[in-house]
Every structure is written in C-alpha cells, then in structure tokens.
Image 1 (cartoon, rainbow, N blue to C red):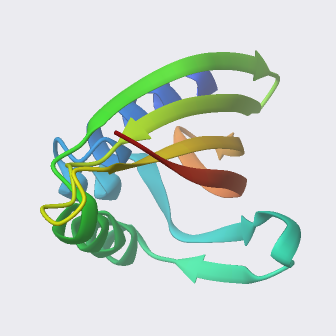
Image 2: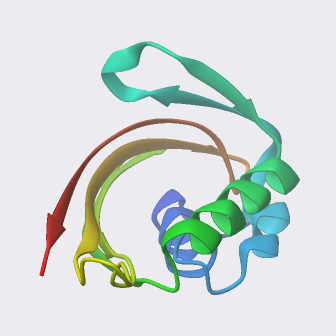
Length: 126
C-alpha cells in the first residue's frame, strides 16, 4: 500500500513533473489513464503518464525553461486543490514573457493522480 498522502502526490507532480524538472516522473505519480478536464471548455483529454510527460516537454520547447512556483495546495480527502504561477522565457522579438496563472483540482487514488480539472489564464509581462 502506498503511504503517500494525496497532498504528497500532487506536490510531487507539480514540483517535479509539471515544473519541467523531470517530466518522466509522471510514470510514478499518475494512473495509467488520467481524465483531464480542460476548465470551462468542457474538453476532456485522456492522458497517459508518457503523454503527459510529452505535453510538458512540448510546453518547455515553446516557453521554457520557466520559473514555476506552487502558490497554493489545499487537501480535501482524496482531492487536492492547487494553484501555480509559471513564467516563460522572454520572447526574443518583444522581450515579453508569457505568464500562466493556473489552478487545478486533482483526484488521487492509491498514490496516483487519476483525474484533474484545470483552468488557467495567460498574460504577458516585460
């Protein structure tokens, strides 16, 4: 039996995988298939750990390396609410950086993330 709490699992996922430090750790922290609800759009994406790792690498290629800060973690039973701020590298042409303010609610079972609902907004700053 896994002794990590849902808070431990989500904190590890954000700080290690979503941050871009080690995307392949998704295999240790996510279920074989995760249902990702994409905020207000209503789109549901089925993600595997490998697919999520690839998604993080794609984001890194486009906007990284980035500064990633978890600003809130709030456990609630088998779920954890999380918020973060992600600041991408400056655009060479404008000098502006993409800033993402994200929030999600992750569901954890048996020591692995099984689903999440995510929403975010992007801004630019100098």
